[in-house]
Length: 454
Image 1 (spheres, rainbow, N blue to C red):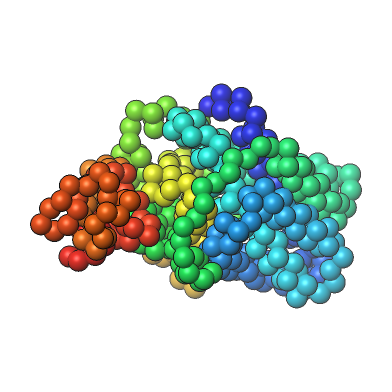
Image 2: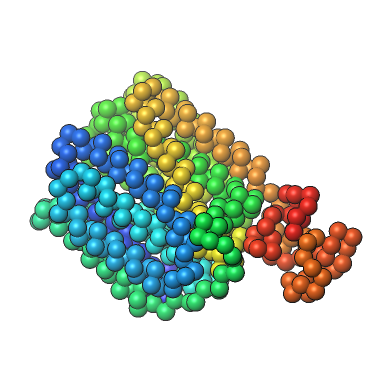
């Protein structure tokens, strides 16, 4: 897996991603302490609102930035968003009102919503080989999981020496280091974008690409599968461990560590399997494993707790983490197959936005249902959502999903440059190539009786 780090450009980009993730982790911990200082007992409400603002920024900003990405060189976009995040992090220690936290959190997350899809769209151009790109996806997944483990440990060590305000300084240094690494990398120039229309039309293209491509519609359904148990883990672990099982506060970290450990283990093993097995053959079973574990959790939560409860929870969280990695990691490969190099920023921006829309649904459900109806009910409802999404993914994603498809261009004029290899038929010129949604192929073959490409 580490062989891809021999590529200097990718090595610098990956290191930039890691230091930015650590900085973000430090900011999250410092922000919770800042909220407690300002709001006291209402700190949970402040953080809950900040989390909602984060999701709104992710869902709303990413497509717009994706639409404008072709107007700005990728290096400039990545460095600018890192600098914005550094300035916001530097300003956070000076806030004195709750509304100031909300404004700065929105700016911070809006910059992240611009940085992440642009970064994701750059990696396939840096690593054009499929095997290398697969290993880069696993490394990226591993980086996210390690950040979840490393940042709290680093924060605890720093807090034993300095006040939490200094954590924001660490965040700033992380973003500045990320910007420096991006500047030092030689980024490939993306293909020019040929789409027409205003910002709204360009922003909508990524979503239209998802809705028109069967494998990407299935990916969106799988994002919802991941969000259902993921919300249960993130929102309710502390209540399950502290109130449900009556265990000490330190065991909350152990439970979340089991989830992250399962995800890391799967990320390390995935490249070997993806080299031999297709994405569909791994992602769909992973979705049903996740759903089955969540269903079993619903049953266990309805039973009186016993000595078995704590090891069962750790095993369930580890299994959910592993299945999450199996489902999420190959997603970049599907996007790469489904969009041209020029359209990758829009595709990744749409995936970033739509996937976080799933979390925007499941986060409040997990919390509100647990508080109003109890943990077993919350887990059961999320299980139903995950099962419905997993079944939808199976139905949407064709078992045979070749890259090249035969199709007819009924509305293109004779002599069009795209038809040089087409054979005339009664319905129009027919040819075969790697099929992706674009201006010449607005619909998937077979989805409409009459179109420019049927």
